[in-house]
Image (cartoon, rainbow, N blue to C red; front, side):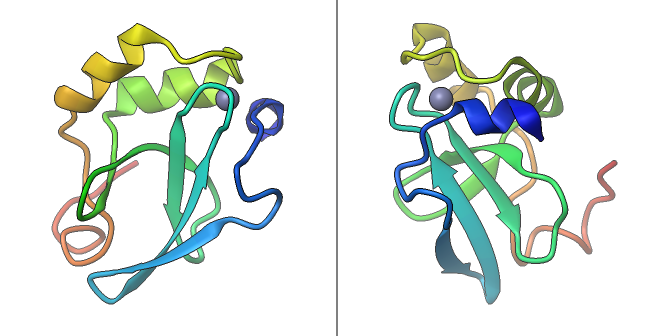
Length: 103
Ligand SMILES: [Zn+2]
């Protein structure tokens, strides 16, 4: 994913590893735009995500496509905040692969 390389990951090339509901979730946050991206261990592609107090959630598909497709905006966008509140994407881990087909 070339567009993702435009971001400045806070952890460099190595993503954060978070254990959530028994599932290892890899997480990157961009220092410039503050967007979060996550994927389950073994997944091929990163997805747009929101890191809440307790857990990481994947964002809706339209948000995901925008974030993956446009690269780094270089600054935090106010419009990103509203995307978090309207999220209804799947949550990695227990609520993930078995309960919903994504694709
Ligand atoms: Zn960025």
